[in-house]
Every structure is written in structure tokens, then in C-alpha cells.
Image (spheres, rainbow, N blue to C red):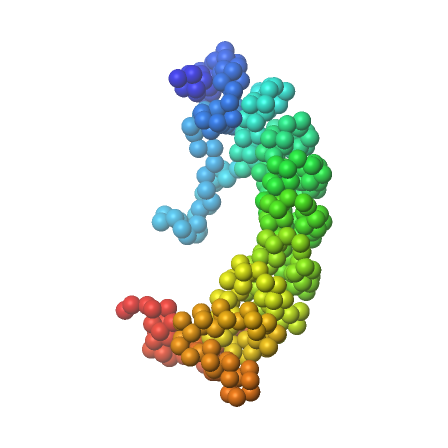
Length: 383
């Protein structure tokens, strides 16, 4: 009820024909009084009211319009239609919104948590970040005495890095240096987002997280190692090798998550990551590896043959049983090959050549009927 009253007062304050300044100040004060808890109406309805205050526009109005394009039925590529695709902050509205944010920031825990919920939503409006001093708020709250408030800052890092990488990294470093377990786990969870926005600058965070004592942090950080392949495949592969001897089992298990990409990039496995993981004796790792090895047997027996002699014989029984359950007698073919009594088994699944486009028109185009038949065979198109 009170939120409805605040909304109505703001609508009267922003009435273009008869603006009511008394309702304006009353509405701002009422919103401040209603902002008490970091959940429910104060989060979402409160945010929309704060946004309307900062923009000095009536609540419920569409502040922006999407870019027009061929996805719209009425699109005309030759028409020039002015559209408001970005919000414009209002000076007096920003002053009132900043006052509101300051009131929350300098109050109790619940109000500071609500502030962080609002800031997270306001970061979706790049035009409001600088006028509302949201970066300064995040810098200050990253050093908040209560770890729960600081942990909320972590959820804002991705958008902050997109807006200002330098200040975003400054906030990330402050949070990374804190010792609270909640914050350490939160930073490990968003490490992938930091990687995708900062590249090599995120590697120091990864290195230090892999030295952490908490298994949850180690699990999240080791799962993020795969992001290194987008920076440098050799560095990524070498990092996988360095994790093979890690003391914590979850770190070694997470290496398996990168093995499919690793095998594609390094089909000969010169670093012998697959044999090392298999011979480690971790049953969970062996279960995950078993499917990869069986798939390798089906498609690339030659690659499987390079790894097979390096696997400990006493650990192969489960692999043979699973292989026979899928295709009876397949394990016997490999056993005979191992003892030089048989030839290398043939692939079961034919390898399809992947067409690599050159970006140029071919000299000769395929027949239309052949192309349609290819679509039917490969994609299952129905006429």
C-alpha cells in the first residue's frame, strides 16, 4: 500500500502539465522510509522508484526503446526513426537519488544489503553509473566491515569491469585480499566472468586461488582453468599438467572437464595427461575417463592405442567390462592387439570430414538435389 502511495506521489510530481513539488519531496522521503529490508518489495519496486527519481520520469514509463531491425515485422531499412536507446540522467533527480543511496549506505546491515541489490540493478543502466557514483559505492563497500555486504559487491564485478576495467580490477583486488571464507568462495565463483572480461589480468587471481586451503575455492578455481585455453593453449595444457599432482582430489577430478578440448588440441597427448589421471587410482576420475576412452576407441582407435599401453593393466578390467557391455568382443580385440596377436581394431563410427570454409566462392557449386539429400542425411530435415 505504501509503495503504491509513493508511486502515485511520484507520478503527480512528474506530471508534465502540473508538477507537484511537495509530492516530489514527500515521495523521496517515503521511499527512504520504505527501504528497510534486502528482499521483497523494497528490492524491485524500490529500485524502479529510485530509477524514476534519477531520471525524473513517471514510474511505469518505458525509459528506452530497443534498436529497430529485421527482427521486427514493421522494420523499414530505409526509414530513419529517432529512438531513445539510452536513458538520460536528470540533475535534480540524480541529487535526490544520491541522497537516497547515501542514506542506505550509512545505515544498518539490512539497509546496506538493500543498497547493494539496488546497485546491482542500476549497473544495467550504464548512463546512470557515473552520475550516481556507483563505482565509488562499490569501492567503499568492498571494504565493508560485514562480509555479507562485501560479498554482494562480488556479484557486481562483471558489469563494473565492462564499464571501467581499471576500477573494476581495483575492486576485485580489494575483495581478493580479504580473508573471509564467504568472500573467497564468492571470488572463486565469479572468476570465469573476470577471465572473460580481463583476460591475462585474471591469471594472478587464479594462481592464488589454487593455493587456497578451502576445497570449495579450489573446486571453483580448478574448474576455471579451462578459460586459459582462450588465452594460450600451451599455457593451458601446462597448467593441467601442474594440477596432476595436486593434494586435493577435487582439483585432479576437475582436470577431466578439460580433457575433450585437450584431446582435440593435442591428439597425441605428449604430456601424458590421460595415463597420469587413469593411473592415479581415483575411482571418480576413472569413471569419467572411461567414457572418453571408449569414445576414442570408437572414433580414433589409433589415438586410443597410444594411450592403452601406458595404462596400468590392473586398472583396465572395468574398462573391458564396460566396453564389452556396449559391444561384445571389443575388449578381446584390444587384448590381442596388446599381446601382438591381432591387428589394430577398426573404428566403429566413421569420422566425418568437417568442412572448413575459406570465405571465398567455390569454383563449382554442388547440385541442388545433392545438397538437399545431404541436409536430409545429416540434419534429419523432413520434406
